[in-house]
Image (cartoon, rainbow, N blue to C red; front, side, top):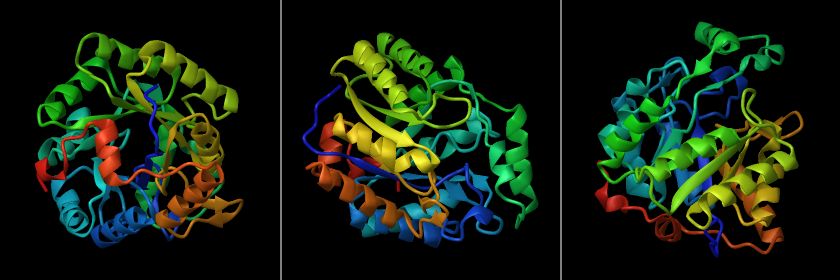
Length: 310
């Protein structure tokens, strides 16, 4: 693991997992997404990870026009590093999913490192009323869903988006995904320093026990040595707890309403910025400093905001 002097905070502003019904605080429109991203940056996030949603019913979309509606404003108002999704939604093809990153050539893009079951349907037990018809169907379909990320899919994203200088947030939901990443490192398609976002607590991936975190770190250390930058993503109620454990061991952290809608048991987080401030309080308690966007660019060897297409 590459040793860094400051912790990079990534904020995942809105995503494909959650639906509008589940929280009134989830940003949906372009204006809401831009404002949430800027507020998260002002609170201390060096990176914002962005999806787009249809402004009418909130369903996930990878239409570049939907991203264009907020990317310019974010760039104008902040120097935060923009990280665009290539995950989109598990119900999309890889050709659909890579469209925004291919079009805008951001400094960073997310990249899922393996096919997996992706079970969102347990949420159906917690919510009984839905604003839009697609929401319940979206969750129900995950009972019989394989989130496809084949070796050919991963290579297609690496080659096509990487040609414009985009680097990647490699989302690893299990130890097998670390080995998949090692395969591409061995082939020379991924070069250090690369950002490994270890994801815990998604049904179909590794669990959220501290021993799961330790196992992922041991495996990454053995495979990559000092070539990688480590980050922690705990889904749902695991968000702050695992971020604290990981940060104490040298990890960077990811928070945001894409990963957890909650501020505590039964209490919805009112903003992405609130979660950024919460993790900053934890990091301060651990005597850890937070990286600026400029420092994150240096740590991750990014191409710079002047070289993106928005």
